[in-house]
Length: 249
Image (cartoon, rainbow, N blue to C red):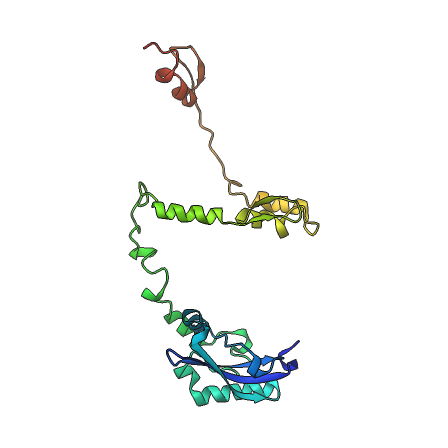
C-alpha cells in the first residue's frame, strides 16, 4: 500500500514539555488522527524522546488534508510558519514532492550539520584513538596490564546470558554468536538454497592462513647425555639435557 492509498493524511506537531522544542511532520495512516499514537521520527527528536520519555511530549494535529500531495505542501507551510528548522527538532525543511532529500542525495546543509556534530570532543572516539590516546606510539602499552575483576565479571555475565540457538538446517545447537551467524542459518551448507561446494570454496578462500608462506626451519639432531635420546633440538631442550628424568642429581 502506497502513502497515497491511506484514509487519513495530517500534519502534526509534537512538543517537548521540558525544553519547549518541537517537531513538525506529516503522517499517512488508516487510523483517525486523534487515535494515532505516532509521535515523530526525526533524528534529533527521537534522541530527545529516548532521553525524556513519551510522557514528557505532547502531540497536536495541526491540519487534516484530503490527499497526500496536499499533505506535503501543507507540511512545508506549517514548518515555515512555526519556524521548525530554526526553533525545533527539524533538521531541514521538507520537500513539497513528498521527500526531504532530492534524488536520494543528502543536502550539503545536512552534511555540514552532521560533520560539525562529530568533530572534536563531540566525537565518541575523541581521546580514545589517534595521537591523543595514551597508547599512541607507545610500544607494548598493554603489556603487563591486567583486566579488572569488574570487567571480567561483565564478560562472564554477557557470555552466560547468551541465548541457546539451533540451526534449522543442520540441527547445530550452540550459544548465539558470530560463528553461528557466519556458518549456520542462512549460510549453513545444509541449507537447500545454498550450493555446498561454493560455500566450502568461499570458506577456504577466506581462511586467515590462506596464501601465507612459511619458511621451514632447519633443526639439527642432538643427543641427550643422560639417556642417549636423539631428536630435534627444540623438543630435546624441553624434555632432556638439564630436564632429563635420568639426570643424576
